[in-house]
Image 1 (cartoon, rainbow, N blue to C red):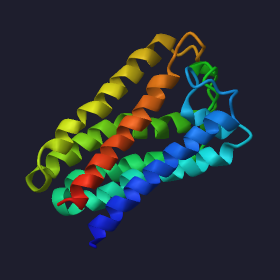
Image 2: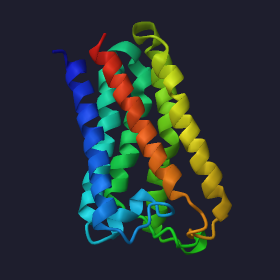
Image 3: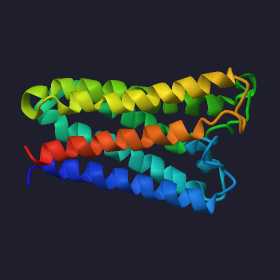
Length: 199
């Protein structure tokens, strides 16, 4: 087994672990309605440490797949490490509640928003770049598959734009596209890992 294979398996395991932790948080912190509350808010609840561990797993997954893809895409995969840095930073910097208007956001909450944006907005870009860079060795599947992360990001941006900086409310169902982004991003990681393992 090569180092790339180990990294690919690590990416899958970390991604699945993240999904399991967030699934558990839906039950142990039911006060955070998944239809309109952001995943980050779980770190504010009584079991916030689970979300912090989830963010760490969320960081390990793209970092590991970046390592796995390096032999095929080289510097084209660096964006995945940047995305991972956003997730690891979000693990230790708390979000403000979604109900906080932008004008009342705390300094820490603003930092979390920046770090979260590196992950949320950066992943589709990083996935496309890694897919294009590794096309010679792995084919065009990963580049084409980056359409799914892009689609979920656009859905998230469309829904969240309706809040106009006034803070969240049950009327703005941003929670589902937020979770869809996570699933789509991790699905791309699994596909990339499978491509590496089958090469």
